[in-house]
Amino acid sequence: LEIVQIPVLQDNYVYLLRDPGTGSVAVVDPAVADAVEAELDRRQWRLTHVLNTHHHGDHVGGNLRLKQRYGATIVGPRADKARIPGIDVEVGEGEDYAFGQETARVFDVPGHTRGHIAYWFKASRALFCGDTIFSLGCGRMFEGTPPQMWASLAKLRDLPAETRVYCAHEYTESNARFAITVDPGNKALGDRVAEVKRLRAAGQPTVPSLMGVERLANPFLRADDPGLAAAVGKPANDPAAVFGEVRRRKDTF
Image (cartoon, rainbow, N blue to C red; front, side):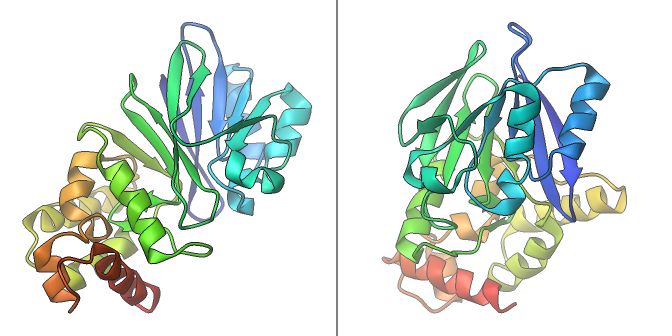
């Protein structure tokens, strides 16, 4: 897939995906329509699909206008179909969705919202995870519980190390400032923090990151690490409780 990252609003990322074999073009989580239309016009691409991960306005705000203009098919979570504007195709856990000559495996990842999903394009080594995983962070639990969110994160964490994590926000600098407070001795985290500082100083995005890096550096993916459990004063045999405590600290950081 040809993947184009479009920064919109204050810190959102919208993604255009083009399958060169068929010319199919998808947009992932169009927060707004105008920036998407401008990029499509610039590249002379025609939108065929909208892929939504969850219902929040900064992910579905452009749905209806894009559908009206291009006749695009809107794909979204079956578990939250009532809150996805214009939804045509409902998908859920373990299903494959064909896009051009590529296929996305769908994961149910509740926690941030109750009906959140993620799309993994294995052949392109690309994960579109919305607000479930951020680089060095994860989404707030607006509608889910710590056990739900930990299970969702653990599911995505198991994807191959070379998987590129295309999350929906540029939150990495602030996530890094928090992460080192709970996992200060983690060399992988220290290396990632230094890289993030270099990228942001140069005006570059920190997204996508690699799952292999996140697995080692992101404290929210390390709730089953005994050292992190000890650092936050929770039992090592209860990773959901460790995750919940790390998330609680981040919420008030």
